[in-house]
Amino acid sequence: MTSTSTHQTRIASDPDVPLVRITREFDAPPEKVFRAHVDPELVARWLGPRGLEMTIDTWDCRTGGSYRYLHRQGDEEYGFHGCFHEVRPNELIVQTFTFEGMPDGVALEKLVLEDLGDGRTRLTSTSLVDSFADRDAFVASGMEVGVREGYERLDQVLAAG
Image (tube, rainbow, N blue to C red; front, top):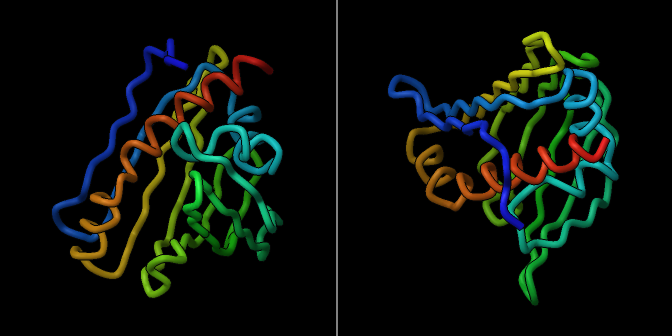
């Protein structure tokens, strides 16, 4: 399915620290965008690229909680897990993120929701990793496609209510 969103997903690698910054606007208030990030049934509908099936093993989205999910495509399976360090409704999620195929590479992620008024939200996500090499591998892994397609799918989830 093709997206009808006019919002651009901006992905930038910081030249000074091993960090990736993603910025995206949504035509929904912060409460809805936040809920789509914390409700496991909604997360499973949009997170990741098209063509992958998502199964959530654990999803305890609260300060001190944790998560684990799998993406599957045919016979291939990709596991991810992490911990929620800080969850503030409608404004902030701080979590770790580990791709189980590279278990030593842990990213610290911060998602900030900004109310733009008129039922719109700006999401700014930063992912900090251990090294520039790890950051560049993270970006080269196809992360960009998954992020863009996932946010297009999130637009559809938000529009459906």
